[in-house]
Amino acid sequence: MGDITDVIASWKERHSSEISDAKEIVHATKKSPLTIVGLSLVVALVLVAILAPYIAPHDPIAMHLENRLASPSMSHLLGTDELGRDILSRIIYGTGVALKIMIIVLMIDLPLGVLLGIIAGYFGGWIDEAIMRVADIFMAFPRLILAMAIGAALGPSLVNTMIAIAITMWPTYARLARGETLSIKERTFIEAEKALGTSKARIILSSILPLCSSTTIIRATLDMGNVIRIAAGMSFLGLGAQPPTPEWGLMVSTGRSFLINQWWVPTFPGFAILLAVFGFNLLGDGIRDISDPHLRRGE
Image (cartoon, helix red, strand yellow):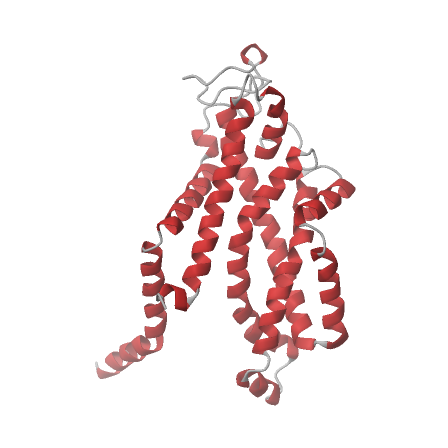
């Protein structure tokens, strides 16, 4: 019985700081109404994307020309577009398209940017110079303009949109990871691992990478709204998703001709973009503040 008590006491002592940090995070979240609003919007978007086949009242690509440009009514809550397609159903399915773009872009950017940043910071010298100068070239141009140029070169499609956005965003994570690595590699435990003969690859993957991940993940949450905004902008210009894909930017683009007399055609998809970007920006700001121990303790 005594051994079990000792094990429990040891576990509590070992994890007391983690439990304390978790309580502080929960408390800080409760004190931040805007973070809760952002989290609620993001959760709602995820649920809508998952449940789209069950909650969409109509087929998002089914055309009914006899019912084109119908105003909002009980049968079509947000009206229909120029081809008689239900706007609400297309917005619901467009949520999944927007989230898919965001997730895939970040799945490409985070590993690529973090790995290149760690390599540059750890090895230094000409490797650091080469990687950082390439990053500077990409960062010298506005992100949207560069993504549009790459998208135009690759050709208009949803896949090429993801590739174009991913290519423009990795330098941000590379710079963050490099800065963290320059600080981490000077710490005593890294020097101890080198003295023990630990391979460079093992040091990078097991010691440096976990410590760099938190900063870059926080940055990624701040970029989620930007990814959706840039993807919608490229689709609006004809460089992203192509008809009949229910993508928000494309819906705004095709509906802009009807803005005066049939305002609902471009307005509701535009409002969906606004809500999504707003929700992810609020959540990203909240996560950034909560992750700072000084801010969450009110210091």
